[in-house]
Length: 231
Image (cartoon, rainbow, N blue to C red; front, side, top):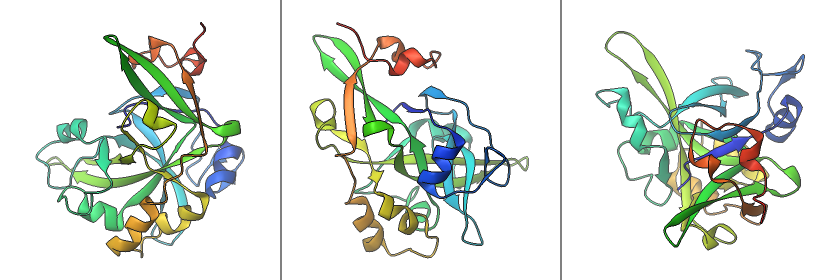
C-alpha cells in the first residue's frame, strides 16, 4: 500500500535523476514549475515521467488513481491508487497499461502507518542522503461522453522488505536507476521482462523515522509533515 507520498526537489534534481530536459530552471518542453509537496494524496495531480511518441522522456501531471479506459465514469480512480505488481499483468484494468503505458513517479519519500494499541502512527520512508526515488507506475487515458479526456496513474506495489516490513506488508516498487530506461521503453511489452524489472525493487536506499499525525489529513501539506517526531 502507498497512500501518501512527498516530493521536495528542485528542477535540477529532477532533471539529473530522471534524464528529462531542463530549460530556464523549468522541467520539460511545457516549462513545468515545481513546488514542494509534503503530503500528496489520492485524486490529486502527481508529477510523472513517461516516454513520448518519439522516444524522449517528458514530465507531465496525472491524477493519482487509475481510471480504466472502459470505466463508466472517473470515480473508478478512487479505488485504484495502487496496483499489485504480482497480478497486474492478469487484470483487465491494468494489463494494457502495464505493457504500453508505464511511467515513473518521482518521490522524496512515502508514508506508511503502524498500528499499535489502537493508534495509527505514521512513518516516512525516505531516500538516503536525499536521494530521489523513482516509483514504478502505469497510466491510462479515459475519454468521457462530453469529449473530456483524463490522464490518470497508479503506483505498483510489491511485498515489503526491510525497513518497510517493520511497519507494513506492502511497499511501492522502487526502480533502480538502471531500470529507468527499460521501464519507460514503450517497445518493451513482454510480461516476463516487465516482471524482471519489478522483481529488482530497491529498498536499501531507504531510511525511516516516525512523523507527526498531521500527515493523517491531506489538508496538511507543510514541512512539518516530513519532520522527525520528537520524543
